[in-house]
Image (tube, rainbow, N blue to C red; front, side, top):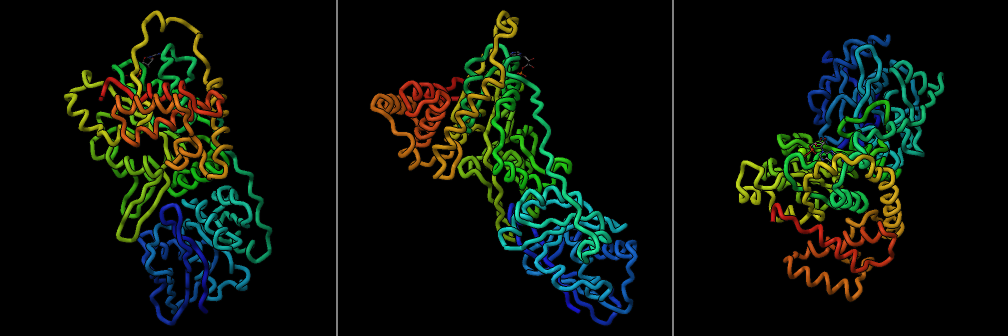
Amino acid sequence: MLTKLLSFANIGLDGEIITVEVGSTPGDSGICIVGLGDTAVHESRQRVRLALRSSGFRLPTGQTTTVNLAPADVKKIGPRYDLPIALGVLLAHDVIALEQKQFAGTLFIGELALDGSLRHVSGVLPATIACRKQGIRRIVVPAVNGPEAALIPGIDVVAAENITELLAILGGEKPAPEIPPPASSPARQADMDFADIRGQQHAKRALEIAAAGGHNVLMSGAPGAGKTLLARALRSILPPLTQEESIEVTQVYSIANRLPSDTPLLTERPFRIVHHTASGVSIVGGGQMPGPGEISLAHRGVLFLDELAEFPPHVLEVLRQPLEDRCITITRAQGSFTFPADFLLVAAMNPPQYTTGSPERIRRRISTPLLDRIDLRIDVLPVPVDELQKRGTGEPSATILARIVAARERQCSRFRERGIRTNKEMGVRDLEKFCPLDAPSEHLLRQAAERMNLSARGYHRTIKVARTIADLAGADAIGVSHIAEALQYRQMTGVE
Ligand SMILES: Nc1ncnc2c1ncn2[C@@H]1O[C@H](COP(=O)(O)OP(=O)(O)O)[C@@H](O)[C@H]1O
Ligand SMILES: [Mg+2]
């Protein structure tokens, strides 16, 4: 008998439905898998054979079982096909009796352990989303992946501990176990509160604007001035993810197999700290079968590059495209893979006089095009000792966060019909529509653009920052003071 079961291959953030066809013919070659599988797919033969034996099934001898994973031009990666292969083998040999309707319209993913139990696999959330898009009404996954699949409404989730339990559920002898509601990530434990940072009003204000509107930040200052401290404190004022953003971020972590199994839904904004020794591939993503890199793990959150001048120039160059497009496309022979990469870039650096290289070398590294994409550039000056000794004068993070949340709400309601969430996402046409300038603002901006030699991009970005400043102030229209403050952040003594 020929059986067909559905499974799923992740490709970038999306993927493709895979049909697992299993048939048997006389012979003695055991199980043979075709259809562009990697090593883990081919090793499925051994896992399936032993898992079925441990679960008490005997396969007939003198039979060759052929497993075809279709379409043949999509590369199949990893052990996730074990489950549909095992079921297909049982059905093809009539070892179990399930009617077509008991497995049709169902997508199967799961790795088998040799004792027949089902192991955690990556990419379950994107697979469940694909089910909804394609009208597949049920997904079968390992028990540990159940809560992740259950995040998507409207899809029946069957989450089983092992193959025996699964067959009992599919055969109707046992009800599908209830899936516990998703535990969200534990309450944020920010390691730093703005109230603990003395002085630095200017830098704190810039970080508030950055968190409110999603604008990129570069801090320059002498070693020990407090740059790393400030950047880490930013975490405490990031607004919570919306439900939709949570699903997006969780998808990326699911693909990257970085989802903690006890918290299937990520609800905290990512904050990724990248070291300058990290490879280009680990930052932007890639590999033979491309997976998400740091910029995608920072999606809807923060990417923090400390000691910016130490990063190799080619690594900084590759950040340009995602900074503009808010996603990254990686091209391989098998096709191109797109991952989301909408992150807030926070960078810190020592000014030229404190680094081993010449100012010229630093300028070369931090190229003008990269700098042009950084809206808030701030000089961080060391806080004088008597200021450091003052206690309890700073505003707590919770107060700042409340302003940011309010500013985000203003942005959301303004852009509701446009389908964007933050000021930084505005295109040129949005600027015309949402950011009309009065005559004094326009005059100030024109003057400054000439004096500061602003590029067109710099000009537009200044207006976006001004819009965020106005949102923080609860103002409907951008005024001259908002433009003036925004312009102030485009100048930095260190690098230009
Ligand atoms: N404004 C400040 N308030 C409180 N502590 C500070 C401040 N600035 C610096 N420090 C202290 O100095 C240390 C060094 O700061 P750091 O952020 O690592 O400097 P940088 O990254 O600029 O070299 C911090 O760990 C912190 O203890
Ligand atoms: Mg530092």
